[in-house]
Amino acid sequence: MSKQYKAAALISGGLDSLLAAKVMLEQGIHVEGINFFTGFCVEGHTAAIRKKHQDKPKRNNALWSAEQLGIKLHIIDIVEEYKDVLINPKHGYGANMNPCLDCKIFMVKKAKQWIEENDFDFIITGEVMGQRPMSQRKEVMPVVVNESGAGDILLRPLCAKNLPKTRPEIEGWVDRDKLLAFHGRNRKPQMALAKEFGFEDYAAPAGGCCFLTDENYATKLVDLWQARSTRDYEMDDIMLLKIGRHLRPKPYFKLIIGREEGENKFMQGYSKLYSHIKTVSHAGPLCLIDGPADKADLEYAAQIVARYSQGKNQDAVTLSISRVGEEPYEVTVKPLTADEVKQEWHV
Amino acid sequence: MSEHSLDARRLLCPMPVIRTQNKVNELLNGDTLVVTCTDPGVINDIPAWCRINGHEIIGTEQNDDDIIIKIKVKH
Ligand code: SF4
Image 1: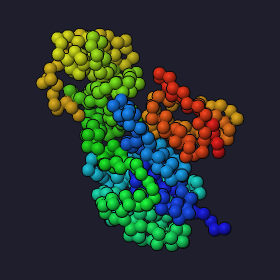
Image 2: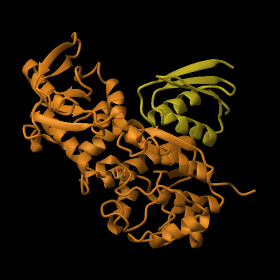
Image 3: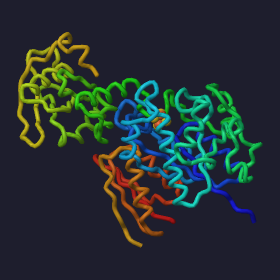
Image 4: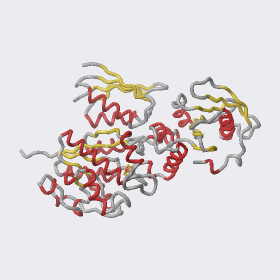
């Protein structure tokens, strides 16, 4: 019996990686999926936090893809190592804070390490030449091959026919004739192939696979770095950038104000780590304070929070202020008026 | 065959899934793992991960604060 070759497929949860893996399965290759968690992945998070999305079923698209394919999926936490990719990308950023090319190189490099440890033969990705402006341009396809160290064991089944032959093709592990020649931004060939394979209800994220492609998110990240005078972050920071209203009335502190019950509940989990403000006399949001705010700053912040409470048009609103490690105390303040909450504070 | 537990409270998906996966990989066939979580996303994600990887869900409970999922490890 001939050997069954084994491929590790990078599964993002999008259509392309789903199709690429399916093309390999059709050729009798043993495929297992790898999904990297950078901390910025779009999967689930905000939908899980915000109540208003709770009518929609929450699913992790990478797990969903693996289930459709009938393959195992290994989810790998790369949060710590990814910091260097994001903070110092050799090839720079895309339209927002997305270091897509460095990200691809890093993920393929990690996949190579994984296949060596797990005795797999090659790596596949769902890349399509010319599809994305930064990481999938024709000129950069070999950059990923070379800089990741994967060399000729990186196969892109969806556009392989446009690229030089890889080892799996040369050695006959896979049949190059049955690989594809997709290119460019037109998604119709992928959609037709999905139909042929019977895939429905697949995920089609608009911007990309992570929050770093999102303009609002990228603005908040840059603001955080500027305020702290350092380009660093912790997991808690990147989670909190995804939720709430962020207002920075002074350069050294900002308010994160819950927009609805689900966010308030989630933010409650951070109340031991951050100073926070909560309305007492009226219904209102929970607000976390990020940065070294002093007593006067916190009272000013309380006036801002009061603006977002049911008491916004009253003369006096009572709030509770809790500083980390101290007993909470109450203050009664006049809410700021709509005009006093400056537009430029909104991050 | 032994029973193990994992505290994945306050973690957001997919972190509870990753922690579950890493813990299950250390366990033996027939062991059970009780995972306690707070992110409602796990109600879909942990069973999906178990289906894909061949492990069995033997119970799911939910109270006001926590979601508790019991898994039988099958290697
Ligand atoms: S969108 Fe995000 S996860 Fe996807 S390649 Fe770009 S940086 Fe990486």
